[in-house]
Length: 291
Image (cartoon, rainbow, N blue to C red; front, side, top):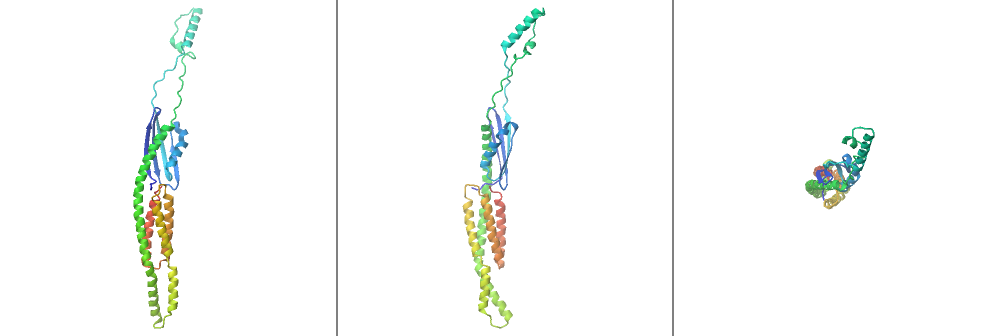
């Protein structure tokens, strides 16, 4: 199944601890690369998120942007140690009596004493990974939808160009046998003109034509082209990422077409080869976008 390397996905998940928003942007790249940007509170999750994204994105450069909004917590009232407060109050009263001072003891004095107002016990930090993973899965799912949609467009274009390439290859195969016959006729005409009535050595002409036919024989290249076409058709329907394999096939197809062009001793074949190379270049550019 063809997937484009480019796409965008956004996911969101909300829980008691807060709200997580994940954005994934993916562009063309020769290999698979994942970059993660996290707020400080989620830094410990970087490895897990990178691993999860890498399992879904086999080829392409992906940027993950994770945002976190903490849930608004209610006001926490610090606990009061009443026993300590009563103890301080009794001690201050006794001190005031001994010093013959006013027995009025302000509340602020008691509250300011150690252990009267205790620190609030911090709640245990909840596990944020499941919430972030949920948002990431949604973002990757939406990214996958976009990449599959673009992949369908790429596949349609590639299939059309592969058919055009096969048509041109068939035209080259039809033309190839005529090249030797025309060379034979032209060679005889030139020799007849040059020798001006002298008898032509037909055996020598046949040898020359045989050598030319051997140099221009493109049967092997045409057979390999057909084999590569079959491999192409089998590759584009695979469920796994096929971009690198298609890239290799483009190189092999281009090699065979170049060899045909170098062997061609015919203007018609040369023109067909030029068209084939143009189609191959367009196919190669499209393959660079495939995962």
